[in-house]
Amino acid sequence: MDLLPLTEQFKGLPILQSMSRKANCWDNSVAESFFKTLKTKLIYHTNYLTKEQAKLAIFEYIECWYNKRRRHSALGNRNPEQYRFYLEEKRLAA
Image (cartoon, rainbow, N blue to C red; front, top):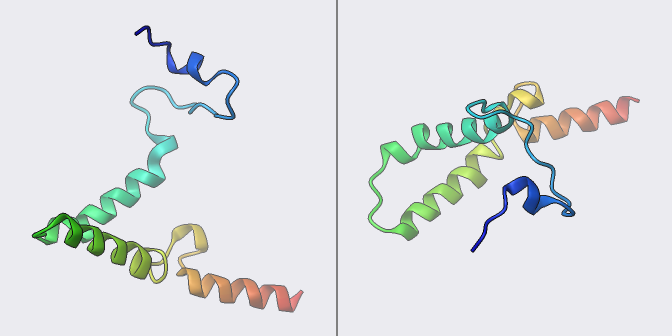
């Protein structure tokens, strides 16, 4: 099978190719940061007996901690709940 370069395969599709150069991870820094945090805060501290146990632990970490209670620098170092409250206050004050 003759494989075309990715840029050729993407022509005509609604896909925007990454603008980063080889070995330059800036476009992937958010994902890299998330996975580093996940590994250092959860994965490396636990021995999982089953794949299901690992999946559940990762789900709980993401849904119960990372997305809801962890402070996010993009939200002014607020957690999402605090940021929602901040936006609502701002909207009411306007």
